[in-house]
Length: 108
Image 1 (cartoon, rainbow, N blue to C red):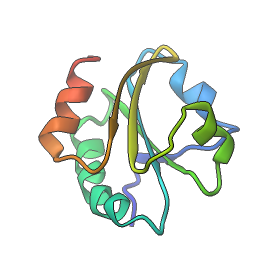
Image 2 (image 1 turned 45 degrees about the vertical axis):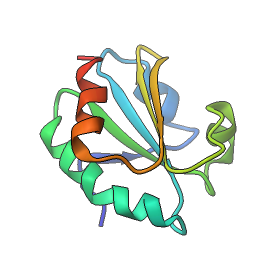
Image 3 (image 1 turned 120 degrees about the vertical axis):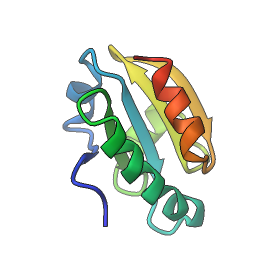
Image 4 (image 1 turned 30 degrees about the horizontal axis):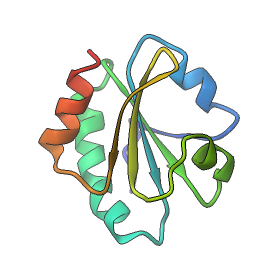
């Protein structure tokens, strides 16, 4: 079960989410993706650790193919860090918590 601190990203809410001053970590994933499922509990922990300091958003590439194409997510999971609407960093594949935290820390 996804953390209540993680927002489900859609084409309707994504631009509003990434337009603010808080860094946004967008996880492009799919339910059938094994590495995506391995990453989910790590992102739950990251969302709790960065509550109020960063926004964690999950985008299901099957449901939101327009967003996946917009950010050229050819491989999943892909993590994209954004701030003020600009892409700051990108990471492909499941990563350990400390690397994800370091990615967000650069934007704080």
